[in-house]
Amino acid sequence: EKMKKLDAKVLDREDSREVVKMYTSLLGQLADFERIKIEAWGQSIEESSQAKLKNSLLRAGGAPLNAPRGAQPLLHVNFDPLLTRLLREVKYFIVLGLKVPESALEIYQRGEIFRRHMGNLDLIVNIYNKIQYSLLPVERPLLRSQLDKINKSLAQGIDLGSKKGKSLNWKSNGIDNFITEAM
Image (cartoon, rainbow, N blue to C red; front, side):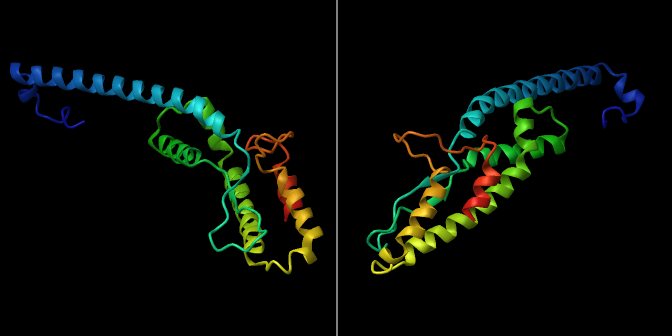
């Protein structure tokens, strides 16, 4: 832009032609570098993002040190931070008008659904953890049947590792039903 606004007499000089040639070459190299980096980013996120979407909705963590005896491990929403980063990066790619890989765009288009699910799951997990943490050992036997129902309901969203059965993941179709049932 600014090069084109220069006076024609300046641009006709031999040394300015060399500067324009170098400038044009540099612009081409920068465009190539940008394209290569975007393609590499697209390939790396293709593999990792699809694997991260196969994570279970929830994961069990350790109980706090001062947790009551008999308390279940605390739960956490299992949405990988790399997926959050991917959603943010795709947003900025779109704002900048850059080409976005198809797989990343598909995940981005479901971003609002992921946010809604994470918000609802956060509510569920916070209530569950508060119950587990605040119940006294003497109260647990009295509420055993209700606690078992809650645990059974939440079990379909937790990766049970070696146990048989498949937990819901971020690509599953029944997440809304799971959330409704858990609430």
